[in-house]
Image (tube, rainbow, N blue to C red; front, top):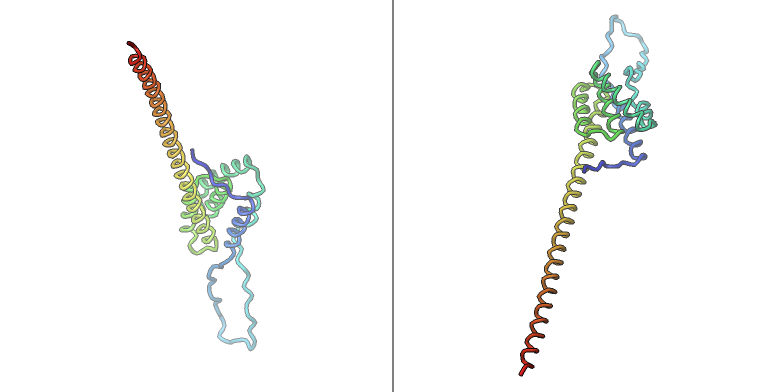
Length: 197
């Protein structure tokens, strides 16, 4: 029986916020401005470069939204995201699906596959870090689950071995008791034969 690793809600929230924060950690390379005139102004103010807004990728608020959902709502969200990923297989949709699966304790191999594929697709995107983080934590969770399963099966095997040894000891004790009764009966017979004239 496979036991799922349980992660406390506090740790889940911190991981989701870290994932969402990574989305804005790096910015794409912007092309250098093209100068069309040959005369340079005397005082050039440094251009203000705003952080690029990636449409529909506010993963921090999405992560918090997922965290607030109940188990049935998360399953409905996962089904909706699967449909969206089939219709529009963008790396953002794959990341959202991977996040929803991770929160719902979904299949770690599927999460890792989704995160890996979104990493490859988002090579120049600030969201690449989220894919990398999701892939690594799902791989780690999968290894932990396998360790739990292995240790559980080993403990069951040890318990069965102990039970069979206990059964053998009990059978040997019964044989010893039976032999002692027979020996006592033979001694009584021997005494009675010796006492006969």
